[in-house]
Length: 440
Image (cartoon, rainbow, N blue to C red):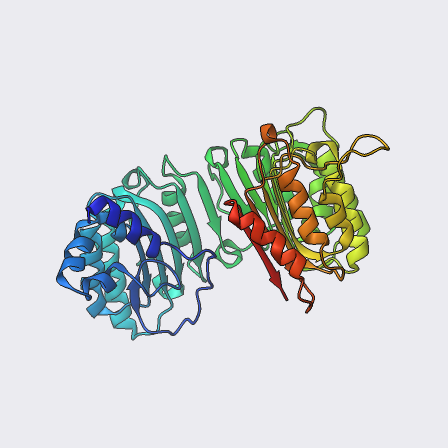
């Protein structure tokens, strides 16, 4: 089989998991692999037979992702072997070292690993660091921005580092001319961010942790090149007394804390927003719903929202569904292409998404005609057949000029058979649509 075909197959098998797993135990055995949570690596292929070993060693793409976890001295040779096989490929590097070895050995590993990686720093594409205080002043010491011409993504989790060492490393990474996305854990800086950060260059930011709302406002005033923004839990909940609004030119906004909605969003405008993702872990209050609705509705001829995701507990399914349906009827939402609702869903949402054809009483009803991806989780539906009728109505009656439903998955919280609905999804699969119905 040709190497280019094997490369596609192997890269699919050895690719990252669909969701980023947790880093897991801090005291686990050291290993070198492709991704966090991954145990199948290019080395696996090398141990099967001579043909697969030659193929794996000839495909440098397979070695371009490396995850280094709690390694010891004996595993440094494997790291060098991995880097050599990556050849000239851009490198995606993730390191998690939690200090489970003796201090002398640990410092030796950090110095040698630093030297290895510095030699290929011109090929770093993304870098994730999770290291403890023992690495301060040793790990990546002396790194300079000019060594990183291709670095575009950075994540930092530096626990209790010396302020000077931490800021030197941050400035070196943030100074990389190609850097577009930077993120850090709440414990890395606390509420005191390094001054002179080039916020205006970043295209992607994630802001959360002990930062104050006013600090976030100051950052967003400077970060005018943003394409994507994620706002998480901050350390102030009161609404800001602001005399002016800030225009944030991010096309994609993700919110992971309701407190951000009431505390920060009233002072922000998103004139080019086209993707909105809400992923929260508590109920939203009435005031938060009003702010969110205002964010979508209160703009003069803005671009339409093409992707909308809502995930979180919402309390009463009937009330929650009413609020979601009300939001989906706003003018900016009528051209949605991608809709994901992972919440307690009442049948009202299903009814809203069903195409009702024209009859004797006049024109039919067809909401969200551009939708091609639909994902509904935790549907509280007792009547069988209405979900199947909904997906079939969108498939059979949708105008070909506006595109067809390409993917639909629905999870129902009910122990019934839902045979009619299962048959409807089977029909969609037969015509090439990715369609799945799960009963919970």
